[in-house]
Image (cartoon, rainbow, N blue to C red; front, top):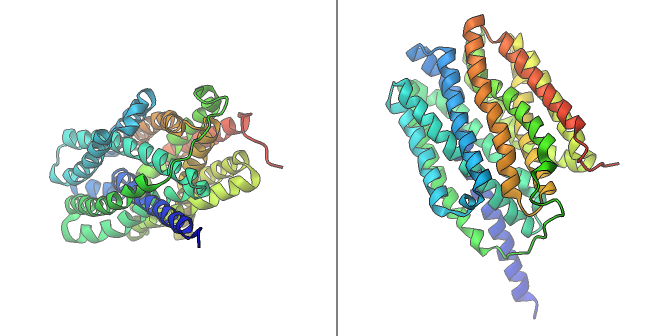
Length: 397
């Protein structure tokens, strides 16, 4: 009888951890799946209704990622912002407002401003959620669940892919933005309610490793992550627009984004699991190779099968790469996961800023996306080469 209170307390604590995980997933649905990636399925609607060029689309995406980079750099040089409720609360509010207001203007200037501010907000939220939820799970012995957190991004992508076509039927591109903003607001409220359970988790001291505090241990990992950001973002920005202009596949285009999201959800569990079985380096190399193959196939994809392969190979790898990279960074800088996540995310962010801008300009100059996609695949392959050159991965035999 004497151990019943302890067992009860343990069950309550474990339940609180689950609530935190789900709350974190909802946070990523809002900040990333909708706040960042709803642009992809709505982009072809804006191009259809407003005659927006690929160059303008690329700049809007680039500004979003510039804001994302600024947020990541801020977290990297001023880690104290990770613990500021004012900063994170402001970031959440800005993420919601900038999504809603995208549908209330036709000014490229204000669109760019919204995407820039929204990118900053999404970076703050992504890093804070990754650090806090990851730490909470690790302290309770559920570190192997951390990968599930990033499934929230996949759910957000799938939600936008399913709902945007329905909103488009009612009110076009404008209502699509407004509707996604309303949905994000509702999900954010649920996420906040669940995330409050964080304070109920019992703290456990985490000892720092001998390398803690030195960013040198993640240098090559960050370089590889930069090239991944530069390459993957071309598909992340333009995949629906590319399929929309492919004869015979126009009606399938928005649902390709659903395929991306649904493939992304299990990938955040599969790739970390594979990393534990064969080692992070081998798993990352496999993910990079599969993603590059999908991009190459997408260059001349003109059948549903090829498009589905391109969508699934992209959706099934990019979040897995994110989860494995951040987990590896946290492992190398144990006890300073927030700092490692900020530095790696900043490296990733630089690539994301450059990718869509260059791809949009090249697509207009070349009257197509063949060259941008070839360069994107080359960047992902180069990222894989740097992963192969990194000697700091633990060898699994």
